[in-house]
Length: 324
Image (tube, rainbow, N blue to C red; front, side, top):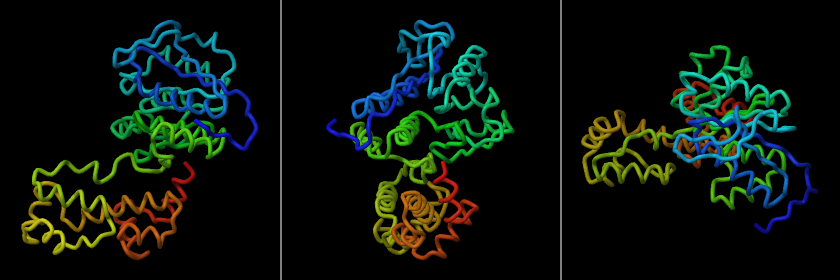
């Protein structure tokens, strides 16, 4: 990298990763690589892998993490990161709880990736707080820990000194947000460019979109239509136009959508446009601009879509998630 931040060198920050057998490899290596690249810009972070007994830890994918240390050997810690691991949804091991508690007592910030949120919840750290986790586990987290407010449709959330993220790759987004908080947006942006990732997906961005949630169409014509709408939500996607593009009748196209997507063309297009509008709002666009660029058209149409699908207003949505 060839970037020099305007700010002077910031103090060294020690980041401890809580690891145990079965830990998800990318939950550890994704954040580690973000911090490594940040050090190429501003040599700020020291990282350590901490386990109950020290020594070697075997990840869920079979790759071994060597040289882990015990909490007693960890020294001063600024940030604790608890990655996800096999089995945490069903049971949080006592040794993982003990390591996390010991490190968190001396840390300014405690973060989790994916099912690592179950460790923080089991310790009571998230009681009365908002958090997120992998969408697949959000229901289980909410049921097991009713004192915790689980936001299933967010990439990462900050509440006090606790930062939680969704699954796997969202740990990269979380760590970019930590780097931005520590070193500023210019450094975080440079790291994101080096990693060839988006800088940076906002914490409130949905974990999954309508396009991702929709199963691939079996029909070639329907698949082409879906790709066209996702690529340009603001285009003229009226039923007659979509049918003409697919070279079928409007009635037949409606049957295809019902059979394969379990919805109507108009409703599916609206959800794709709503996905785009949500991201536009989080990127800082006004309600009017988000309505226009997403294809929803007017402020009122945008408000109705938010109320119908999300049960909130565009203003409240942006206020809520831009705090995360």
